[in-house]
Image (cartoon, rainbow, N blue to C red):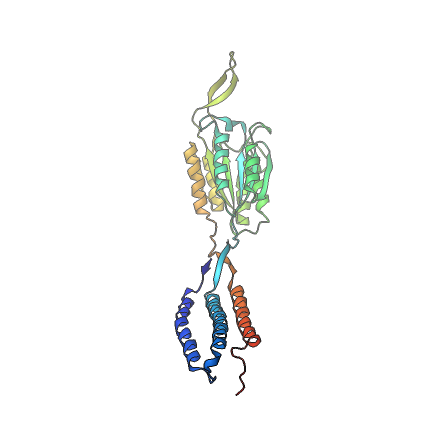
Length: 329
């Protein structure tokens, strides 16, 4: 419990003054006849007077405490804020199995960084699209980050025909954002190759995104240099690898990003991939609530009710038991 207006407690300094005033009135007698034969009666009357004054003093203390406003913190409410709507378009083509990223390969590195990004969200709605030769919606826009991560972890390469349909993947992502009312809408595209499939060109999709006011941030995973790639098993059942060179198109990804007002990133390591997500997060910062509201449990009404009860008891006590019996002259 705490006091919102503790300065009202200074009123308690009046108690000694009130006590002196009460005592002086009792000594004056208040027009009452004194008889030495009624000493016993006076002692009884004095005790009753003290009880009434005791109730009055307690009532005064309770009223002062009520004005000081005793409260206890119930909970803190953060006003809801409108976050961003983000759709992540993830390439799951076979080339994402290249082993030039830690801890395992490109697809696992991308999933790990995306998971970290998701767990840092507060109010953003997130969606997930995956694509290879075709594109599919894995997670609709949601704030259920646990569900998002669970469905993200299920993604793997080889689930659909191989290829890289960047235009189709972006088109599906844009369709999830088209009707969004969020102030900030964006697509984060992660791919390690060039567009070689699909029936929609990435450039045309970028123009649609521009008209819709949706930014596209592109992240190229890997390079066109030779990289180790799984090649099945050898004669002894051990994993075999071969070195392959994969075609990439960083210029295409940059044109997509520039057209929509986003940015293009190239990552050749897990750390660089993490930095790309961190920078995107800073560029598209979610609004912060201007203030938080504290809800309190108020105790002043209880103090006031108790004070009134004590005052009534004091008056009732005085009426039922007169301070002095009537004395006939």
